[in-house]
Length: 308
Image (tube, rainbow, N blue to C red):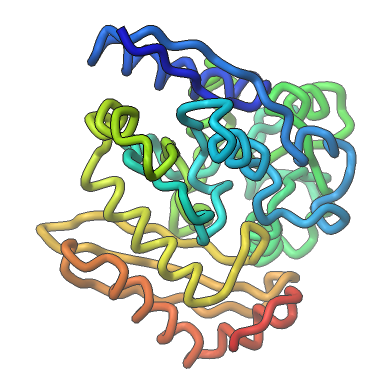
């Protein structure tokens, strides 16, 4: 019986994700699977702001180094944390079936977003969420909020914040869906690229592990996430850009919707494009060029990014 080692961060959500994949592999193949906890740069810097540490690869770099060194056989990532460039020698044999892509609001007094008091303090670590929140409610005091899901919810419960915005999938996976005050629809807040999807990364040369893992791949999710990531790459964006995007299959077509905001939420460009599900990369690149032509490059420069 093959013995597999899954590299994972040590947070409650990361461990849930790794255990979920472990259970699927054991059920599918009867293999022996162990979890190997690895601290990433992002874990070491929980109190630092996103601006201080940057975001590209901080939750994946050490896991990928462990894959390349042979310390682990596979790693499980939230696809929204994965940079668009995969290191040479590594690959993603599987992206599992996507959970709910939406964000959610958890408020201290159960008020919905529109009902929060003027200048309410709302926490998020995401520039994407901040820009969309300020677009809807310019009066909000959006504060940087890092740490695991429990830490974030504790700060709301303790009154340090009036509310926080998090990915619904993560809250649900941790059994905290009952705390959700409001699910934010995609016309209110577009999700991050890859949000709600788990990616399983392996060594490109480890064909045995590749074969075992590939049965967990969901073709529709993979295609949609590839379109979103192609869009992000076309815009030369990392994890911290004021960009929301969501691809889905509708009546046999792939629909890709995206929006780029100025950091203060005052300006935005939002477009939608339909295309063949068989060519998600072309769809993502095409929508990226449409957004650039509509002024997204200027908005991204305001956020510290540049195109070309």
